[in-house]
Image (cartoon, rainbow, N blue to C red; front, side, top):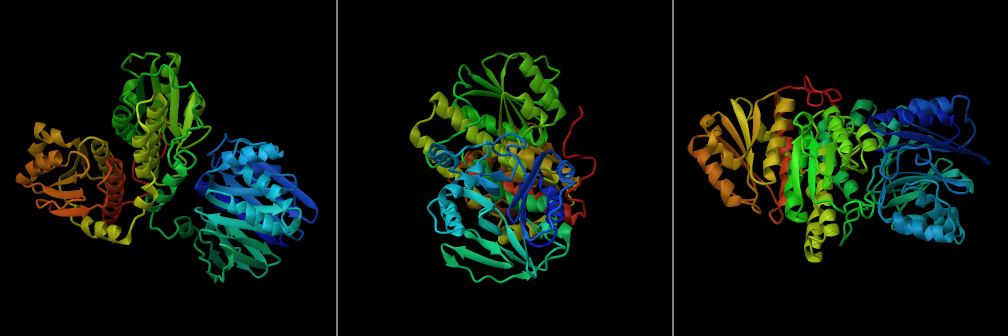
Length: 602
């Protein structure tokens, strides 16, 4: 996701910031920019695409005087990847960079436009700098204006602001998005990750949610709820690769843990306390739509299958799901009352892109679920909804699956509301469940340790069956895919009721069955299916909030009130199980053999 760097001091600033941004490239970005104040001189540079484009723009610029500098790599969430939407954003005499999402930006923007502010970008970030300059009119100091600005922001943010009024000061605030301050004598550095400051600073302090303050002349003041924080620094790690992984063993492990944060990003501005808002979908877009067809591949196909249950159950709209590589050659019947949805993490999946072009030629309205703005599928679609998952370095997808599935759940509720197929009470009930996801997806030490211990028992069978019913059937498919991708063990996902129609012939003590047994949906049915396997001596690992006496092993989940909450909790278990089995087998978890992150050929 987006990256932030900042510097207060007398060293040459251009190279400090460019080097810091380069170290943050692993987070993913589609544009970059830098702003520098030295005395009365304020300079800024922005470029779309690779960081090299920004380097080229700045090749004749140097900044060797005492001053302040901020930089940013942007992963688009509001507005296309353009220079106008790239950070830093300018007011009349101030610049801001920001990671996260300002949830109340529309409300603030409306007030600021009425006040007279002129907006240049489509981003939520720009409200910060205009709000700051409005507060300056009545504040006694620049810091008082910044404090008043931060107090009015809702959502997630890590932000740095510089202004010509205080050319030696960086103002900062952090809530929900990571940011640190690093020190080397009188030089003060900011970064969204250790990697941006390793090799430059010796000590570091990791800001807590609610922290805000300023850095000036080598001094840093931090406040939280208006009380000054007595902070203590600690030595800065010197291993950049380890820093990129934030102390995790693998990027895949880090990305599993990141899901608690990225689902919150996916929901911000879309899931309100009593409503679902999708600004990307213009009024009237869904008029005349009576059916949905979804095309996707791999993990995205599994999120699509999950959503088909939701579209039909919640929105009462017929939904068919196709594997994109099959759809292209089956001479499909396409009617203009069908909304054509494509799902792709990269937005460059070749088969999915070609399926979309077929639907466009047939005159269908199109909508894409994607993680990368300005990608081929996004550009080709009438409407695109960005998952906001940030870059995913592990080849075996985790947080992309979580955010795709969540965004499709959001879309099903939005469609139900727009069509008039859900009442207010049911909508609020769904929203209340959905808003529990960020806390639900926090991986506990006890859960991870239990799965680590269990994994040693599941290394040497002759195969795995992952079984589930309803939405838990596509989750079983995804669990099997994760395991086979990184462990190279044979695994299949099956609807639990299908086992007796042939696959049960394989059952013996060396067949491992991973049974998804939610309390809130068809528990007795799947319990009966698992009992049939147990009677034939299959080894059973049950994942359920209920005790199951026939299970050889049980991973007990907590949620039992809503099927989608059980779905996401069991998703975490399956991801961790695949990870730990693969680690025990000594495999390269992040780069499994024969696989690529983006499949751009047929």
